[in-house]
Image (cartoon, rainbow over all chains, first blue to last red; front, side, top):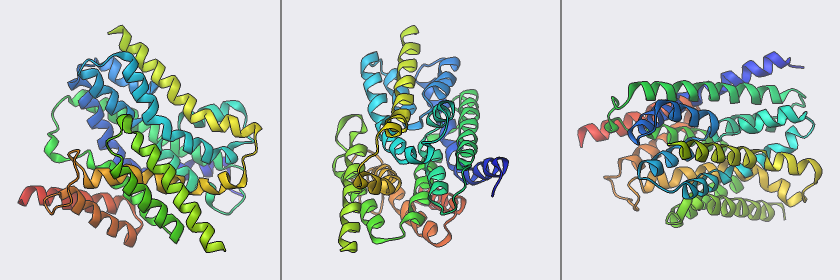
Length: 229
Length: 105
């Protein structure tokens, strides 16, 4: 049986490689936020209050062009709707935890923490302490997101866009997805989700992500059903 | 810019609500087996949906040409991810290829 501390430290350790991709992204966020006219305090507070990279990027851009508050709220909400899928995915694993734990883990449920935590939950061992692993991964991400936002805010506009640092996040996701493509249903789910996301990219509020994810899930289920017959 | 603070707080609360939603709902409600089976496709489906447009439409329009350096770098990164299963090597390879292509062409 692993101890809580062991799980926690392991969660941090497994999140570290992802931070290589997330930290440049957080810095770019800070830089963009100031460029769009946010104050230092607003830019940093958003990293704490919203704590969702792609929504923060979008909100900053919308704020910069003077978008009405209601449009920004709807946009932020819809962009983050994909997290409902993550919520459903972790729900069976955190069912027995007290409400405070559920609240903290939900706050930490970003793309990058989810991707790491769910692999721990999928491992076969029946450790009752996997939420400590989730907490470790989530806090490692949270801390580095806050610090990298702050560094970006501090640097201002000193990192040229020709460095293409924003690409690190897509690469991180590639590194998470490709090794997870272990069977035909997963491959088909990934391919169909990718294709639908491209075809429906014209939808507002990044709704293409939701449409694509649902199609991908249905295709995965269909393929799995075929295999089992 | 007081209204921006309010906007931020509302988006923050909504985001937290979304992340908490099913954790609370599924507490009291046992979903059908089909839903449970579908959950294992969530990570690959969502992340693939995020990645694909980043690679083939980096400027907002579809670009499958060789001058789309992000697509080329992404494909190399996929190969490295498949071979090494290592996040850091994948990022290094992808960024290395992208920056090299940008520098030389």
